[in-house]
Every structure is written in C-alpha cells, then in structure tokens.
Length: 164
Image (cartoon, rainbow, N blue to C red; front, side):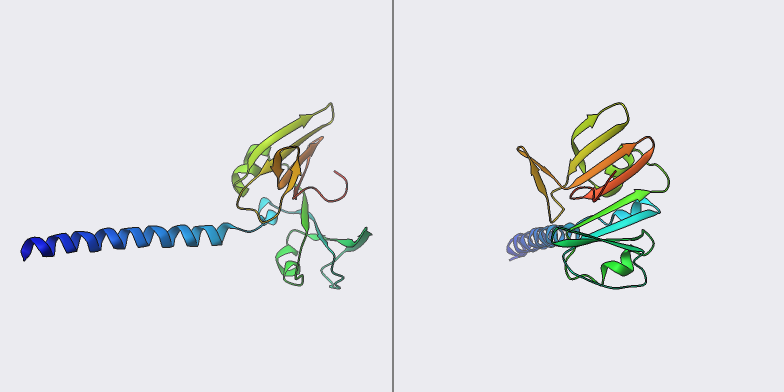
C-alpha cells in the first residue's frame, strides 16, 4: 500500500508540474500575441493608420490616404487614443531622442530580418511571431520597420506610415 501511495504521489506531482507548464505556455502565448506598443520607446510624434473616421482633441492632424486615415498625435496620447479605434492597421513613432536599432529590437522583442544602408539612411526590417499582423517581402515576414535618417529614428508596424 505504501509503495502504491508513492507511485500515485509521484504521478500527481508530475501531473501538477505538467499542467502548470501548459497553463504558463497558454498564458504567455495569449498575453504576448499583439502588435507592439511602440510608444514605450519614448516621446515623439505618433501616427495611427485606420480605416475608421474618428474625432478627438488628442488628434493634432489627419491625413486621408486611399481607404483610410493617418491620425497624428504624441506618444503620450497614444494609449488613450488607441482605445477609440475598433481596428488599427498600423502605427509609427518618430522619436524625439535617437535610440539604437539594437535597443529598439530588444525593447520590443523583435529580430532583424534585413538592413539596407545608403549615404543618408539605414532601414531595418524586423519580425516577431508575437505580432498579429505582418507583410511579406519576398519570402520574409516583416512586422516592424526602423529608419534612421541623419539621427532621426522612426519606428513603425507593420511598416512606417508616411515619410521617414
């Protein structure tokens, strides 16, 4: 009887550990599957792209393009304004203070896919499986773009909105 209890006790412990691991994976997956909150990178000009037409005193400018609108605000207003949309198709942030590409990728949890350099600009394309949306560039998936033009850093998902 004692040996039977030990076996059952070991099975129960293993079952509890297994279920805890499964629950942790499920929670981690669902907590992290979202588009990045790029405003965590710092202060700057923030842009949302959506097909919805909204009005708010937090919006400093609106540009109509194709089938949607680019709304201009600040990174401080981004979390409040984000709640007004039922769907956001893209976001961009031009930072007031430059951050390195490596630092941005680390903070947001993305991996660089490719980088293009010319005399005045460096553009990096990155991907994270944790993001909900992505675009394809050849065979690569991309859901983050980083531009550094003469020290002005702009970050966008899935790509930068407007000019950079």
